Image (cartoon, rainbow, N blue to C red):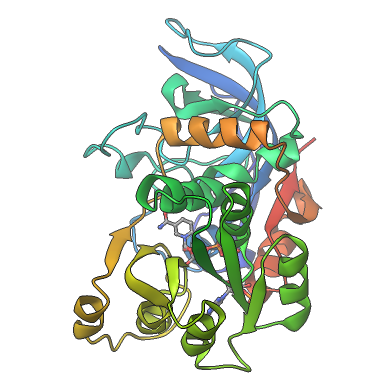
Length: 336
Ligand SMILES: NC(=O)c1ccc[n+]([C@@H]2O[C@H](COP(=O)([O-])OP(=O)(O)OC[C@H]3O[C@@H](n4cnc5c(N)ncnc54)[C@H](OP(=O)(O)O)[C@@H]3O)[C@@H](O)[C@H]2O)c1
């Protein structure tokens, strides 16, 4: 079968197309014929050797993929041959608190990922896809969408009428925008690009702030909420944005710490105290969160925003497109 491997975290050109034997599912595992994968910022960080967690030598990249179950191992009851599934980012985090084994089960990092014709996944580490989604759309969900869902719903307990700030227009942020609208919340989006802000408005953002043209975007966000600040921030910028995110929330507002896209931190802890801020670190999510999210996506007939679909052989070009940050939403690789 076809696959890509990363012999060395030495840049996009280090990605190597290889021919590997088809894997076999063992007890409570399933074999999935992968139809599509999607890219996340983390995948680029791994390829560039900038990821904060250790990576398996010669790893098959990408946490996100979807396809059809073609074989089940002994003891499998949750899915059957023919089911359309996606893998959960953590293969060993079914629900509840993440156990010690969770981190060591991250697809495309600590264990092999989805960029292969066939993959073996744990039966508790797959979810059935919403029926209205294509496999390409389903492949966009595991990392970015589950992270946004965990932030807004599990941590944030978002309810109708509240307000959310999403930063930039990448995978996590566009899903956060869509889920916030689905739940009846107001969304303010930031971006470096006015055309992308216009697209965010078309998706339901009430307002957009260009964070390059308006470096004090936190003050703009407070103004847009009648001087109060937003209820929640989906914080993907990290060190370079956290202080301003604290400026942008209302007193008692919530921040989901997700990303590491920018800069160095110079954070005054008094900002946290002053805002009585609730700050929660988010690490993607469990299989049960993924299933709950899929129920909401199904009821709302929500469609993920796919920026561009690349062919399997064009995997390096897909990574370069992610690196360019020209995208809006998700970048997909089709294997069929
Ligand atoms: N903790 C977790 O479980 C978890 C899960 C998923 C992702 N993440 C992290 O979350 C971050 C986003 O991931 P992703 O896959 O969504 O990335 P992505 O699709 O590559 O998004 C990149 C976008 O971020 C925006 N951006 C860059 N610098 C920014 C800044 N200073 N302020 C606001 N926006 C900025 C840009 O949007 P514009 O072009 O519109 O300016 C850029 O296009 C990454 O750091 C990733 O590692 C963490």
